[in-house]
Length: 233
Image (cartoon, rainbow, N blue to C red; front, top):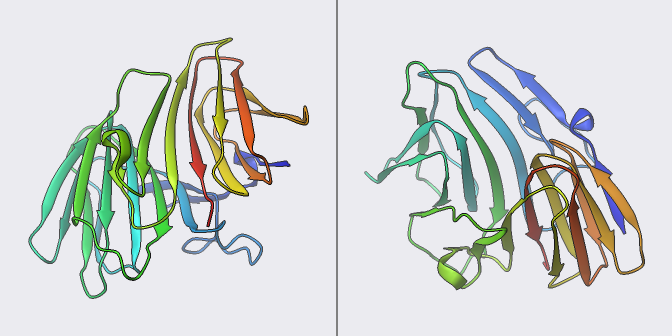
């Protein structure tokens, strides 16, 4: 089953220095029916104005995956770790209780645009505090996985995150590990088709809940960039 959640249905925010779209309840936006999906707690697209910052704050024990779409960001924590990430890179922050984290748009002229995911971390697992990879010029790249397979970022949870780039008319099929997955269009439109021939159309900014499907095929209607988040638990 595929259930779409269009960009217009998502929570919105415009604070001047920050513009955001929230898939799930976040900050001032609250929907008791949308507190997350399996271990996916947060899925935001956010634009930080030139020179803007998120001041230091603490988080629950989650893995924060930032996919930088435009601009350059710097991340710091209260333990002295810091790292920069630019467009075309993905960064994973393994948060810890009692540690605070900040984010800064390093440019004084350009906005910083990124996708951000929070994934619940298994309490007994520990990973390096910061990891970073560069996106490849391929139709499908494994961004993050439990074991860091195929040079992906290593998560503290049984989740697989795929980055997808297709040209118009191209298609890509996935075998899903468990009963749940989430699709997110970053830009472009596509059809999501199941083995039972259920077909849904998603366009720029739309998402979709995938339930009880072993396989799914994506067919790009335009040049497409998207995420598939495979969520067995």
